[in-house]
Length: 519
Image (tube, rainbow, N blue to C red):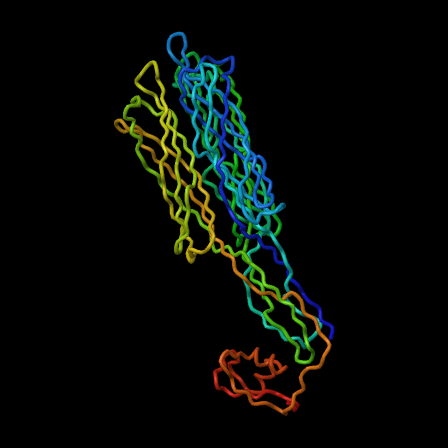
């Protein structure tokens, strides 16, 4: 008997594990010759980014770069003024993940756990802190299973539907955010750019036929010191960005997860019609990375046999990663920063923040995520000498991401980002209101046995001794089990016993099973 096996290739991605590692960074940096001596550190803005990851045996090696932007007060001829200086540093460390192997897939991130800046002397500053690294390692494997048998009408197959998570692919996109900022006449013209930053919010990704539509909003911020004045001005522009990227095989029924990263920022100061520096052209490159996945329903052959030939079945047990669900939720963070013995605030100049997740846990039907919003507020004081001041505060938050049906023994991944933040003066406090967006995904591992090979073998079937057999249905019996045991077919049993509902048989029912007689 010649049979042909139709096989299905199944690719799976399974979370092997995740872990954290604290990396201490420190360094001393010299103030540029073009800048005056340091009088007081106002703020330290730190941007860490990962430049390279390598999965090794039982660990992940992570390399990265840090960009420091430091604002400080310096003595001038008549008073004090604000200056800015930029530095870069590097970091590297290992994240231990047992079972990790070379060439496995990984996803790594980093955030600032703590960072402080001090004055060594009037021409040198010292930066020291901790960067927390997080790595996730994924085991990617594939195997073939039999989905059908052709070439013979004789082979009986028991098929059951199964759901398998499949990843269609990953696609990257480059989104360009352009802003043409014009400084209004009520503000001084630009003297020096102190800080330029870009954040991404309002992310929306739609999967269409053969492509993904990526939309987001870029918040472009600029902090500058006015020309021939010590005034500090903050301006902001919201720029919608979008991109259409092609990816074969995708359609609107599929899910996706997209990450955004600001890769590079450039700005150019230009003169307006009056010859004043009131125009700034800013361009930022935002990189997106979209992973598209879906649940495929496939008919898996649970069992097979032939009524006329002995068959050898080869089954294997595989671990399957199942994405139970994913969702996004927003948490509103409100708090007040008591100024106490610090200078009173007359005007908020700028407010910014970074979020990090400190803990996550799975409970019934949801993920509970705890985190910290690190807030920094630059404000104008009533003191003409020390006319600006900065306060920093760590604001805890908690957010619940609903994932119906999830259990405490499943795996979860959570990521958080800051959507927006505002600050206002209330008496001798600064009120903070922020919106944090939290993404959660729940997976679990299940075992499933698949038929991977089958072939006829030499030998004779047991000879049927009786013309027909009267069989009494036992506990746990199905028509399939009975037909296979007696080397007949379900169709023959149904016809011979005139069964109206073959899927329902009861314990104690009597069935006629064909034997040597030809029915």
